[in-house]
Amino acid sequence: MGVYRIRKYGEPILRQKCRRVVRLGSREKRVLSQMATAMYKAQGMGLAAPQVGLAEQLIVVDGGVGLMKLANPLILLKDGESIMEEGCLSLPHTMVKVKRASRVMVEAWNENEERVRIEGEDLFARVLQHEIDHLLGILIIDYVLPSEKTLHSDSLSINKRGERNG
Image 1 (cartoon, rainbow, N blue to C red):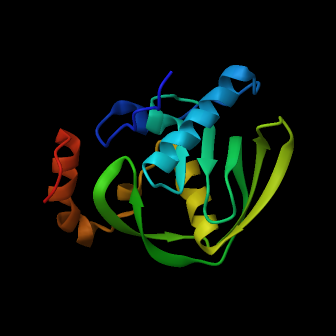
Image 2 (image 1 turned 90 degrees about the vertical axis):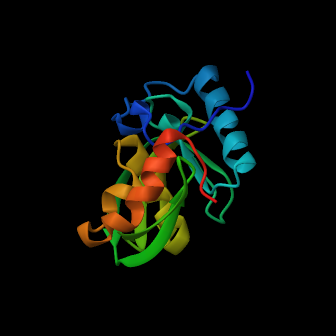
């Protein structure tokens, strides 16, 4: 199988809540590896399974601390807050200011089926939260303040049709 195609805004899979992974078998490990390849090819810092058409709780992240392949990630603790512009591989040419926790603790399974706790700060915390949102059917545009929606509406309608800006 080749590199996954990254799904774009408007595709229903991006709004689905994903099912938990029961076992990290050879298929799931292959999926995680292919997701990592797709993420790096697209120059992203994270990618969630729904972004490649799978409704499973699988993410890959590399927010400056090295590649992590995770199943069933769950945010246990959040602390602090920061507002920063975020982009998304499923919403090309769209940047949105998003308020997120500046520190998180996440529990997940790693690719060796070991339960791990990961502490993330700043950019890495943001990447973890962004990818976990995807598993819940949440996109960055859901954080747009009503007063800013008109700024993003043209970009979103273009993205939904699959066309590119400028």
